[in-house]
Length: 277
Image (cartoon, rainbow, N blue to C red; front, side, top):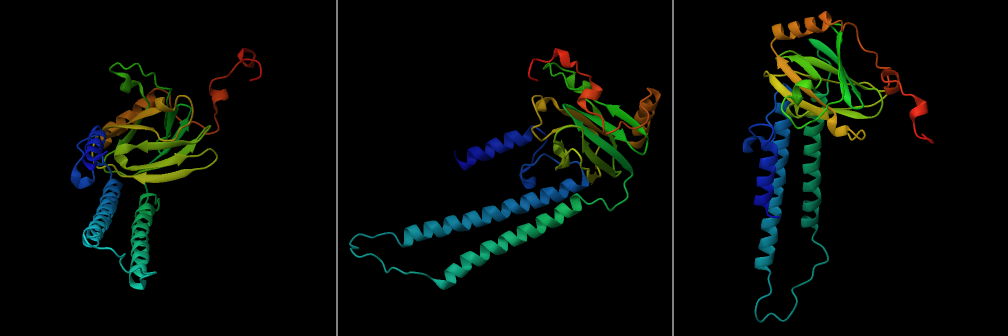
């Protein structure tokens, strides 16, 4: 497959989520403060890779052209066992490149997953087979999701569990899981994190624009993994407050315990199970 075909394919795939631009490395446009960091690191890594790749190709073609066998050549060229300067060069340069990439990656990762700043909101996101629960910790209300029913018809997205966030305000996600490993991922955040039973993971996000974005589980978690979808609505503060009030008015006060499991939420009659289960 040619490089042009690969580039076109990447452009088509990334373009499905927004106006992907070459200047952003064809990434889906980010909607958080951290997304800009990820984009810069992504673009910088690609520039480095392309420069190194171009240099290797130039040196390869130069060697093929300059040192090709010419008509009348009967003897082999002089054979060298080693060339110390060249060997030092192609050892030191790759190590230097790797160390530089490692430094910038570690630096950006530490910032992206840092939770030192005081958040404006804390949301406990609970992954479960195969949906999501959202505990709004400070507001003491919750939203319990149910597994999506994907019919292929319009309007299905409105039935998905929805997470509300306030634009330009810092939200800390406290990630937990009820059963197996899941992964909380909103592509436009350019950031995701695993949800591991018995462990609490955290990261913070500051959304920079309003809108509705799609989230999903990014860890294969069972038969209906592809159904584990949710929405994220980034809204102004007054709309967020109205939504929180609507949850309280519906009696969804308090926080859903993380100790719940599938059997407790949906009791199973063991007599109905096949023999040997």
